[in-house]
Length: 297
Image (cartoon, rainbow, N blue to C red; front, side):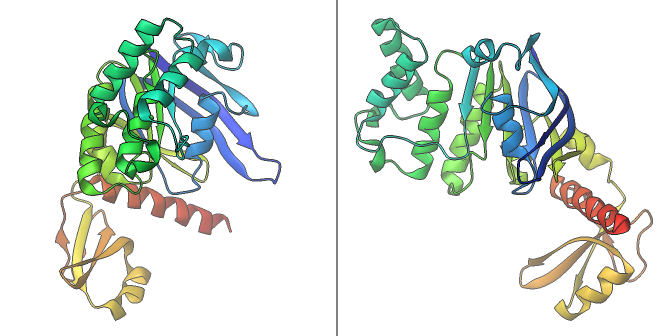
C-alpha cells in the first residue's frame, strides 16, 4: 500500500506556481507534510483528493492512476479539508448518516453500525444527538475525522486539522490520529512543527511549491547534531548577529532573547551547543531556501 506522487506541477490562472515538480512516495503510517501557509500544501491535498487537476505529473495509489480513474480513488479516500463545513441545525448522527448514504453505504443496519461506531471512536457518542452548531472547535474536528473514516478508506488526507485547537483537544486529536495511522496511509498537512514531531514516522518540508526536504524526523534532527548553537543576546544585538552568523531563528525564553545559529564549528563568542529539534531542522531549511532566492535575485 503506497501513494506515489511523481513530478507533480500546478500553476494557477493568475500565474502562481503552486506546485513545482513534487515527487514523494508515502507508505502506510503517518506522513507529515510541513510548510508555511501558502507553501502549496493545500494545493497538493486537493490534487490528491481529485478536487483539481495537476498540469503535469502523476499520482498513483495502490497501482491506480488518480487522473485516469478518479472514481476508484474516491472510493478508498477519506478527506478532512482545512475548512470542513457542516449543517449547523442537524445532529451529528443525522449528518454522519447522510454522508454515509452519499458515500454509498446503502444498507441501513450497516450504516447505523458504522456511524455509531465511528462516533464512539472519536468520543462523540454521548453527544451524537446534539446539533453540530453546539460543538466546540475540537469536537467539530473529531466529527470531521469520523466522516473521513466512513467506508473504511485506505488513504486518509487531513489538512491543517489541529489549527485553533486548545492543548487538551490537540492531545486528544493526536491520540486519535495515531490509532488511525497504524493500518492506513495518512497524509497529514500542517504548519505546526509539534504536530509532525509528535505523530509522524516520516515527513517532508514544502516551501514555495517545491519539496525542500524529506526523511525520518529523528534522522533529520540527528543530521544537525553538533551544528546548532545558541546564545542569550540583547534585542539590539540581533541585527548585527544576523550579519556575522547564520541565524536560523530567535525566540524569547524566560524574558530573554535567544539566538539560534547554524555553524559547522562552534562560534567562539559565548555560544553553547544545542540539541537539535525538528523546529531547528525546519527553520534551517527555510533559511537555506531564503538564501538561495537572495542569491538568484
